[in-house]
Image 1 (cartoon, one colour):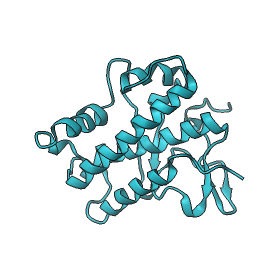
Image 2 (image 1 turned 45 degrees about the vertical axis):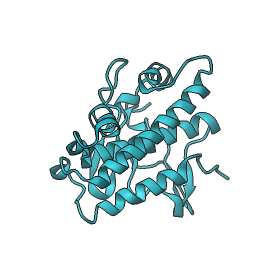
Image 3 (image 1 turned 135 degrees about the vertical axis):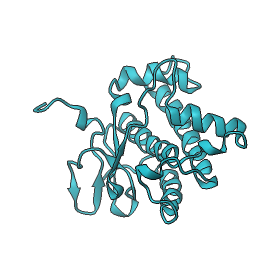
Length: 198
């Protein structure tokens, strides 16, 4: 029996609010620049959760390292997951794929983090227009990916949940290797980056 991932229910709650937004704004590249109070709330909720998950994961991976903020996490996480900045997440329902950690370096954070989350957290009224659909999808997608990595590192198993607890939107880029029964397995989120035949 698989273990329900720590933080998974919170992810599902955040994701459910994101799904509700799709009734008003179609999730498409044409609407990526749309911004709203709901997107602002979801960006802050998801990014704060990612921050918490990354802290726990970094402590698990390297207990002697000091990891208190996103610039600290980079070295620890990339040592363990060198393909993290290339890992794509899919939203099959809307035929969208994106890479939440693209452009992350030891000195630069992803745009959705630096230009949306940080600005909304510190100066919301001045940067309200940064609360975009694109940033919200990246933030919640980053939360989804962070949970997969955390669960695998701590429990030595890929995320596999009861069908009723599966993500309503997100999946690794390639089709899952296990689909059947009453469980939904997400498999290896880096599988799409493996060389052919590997």
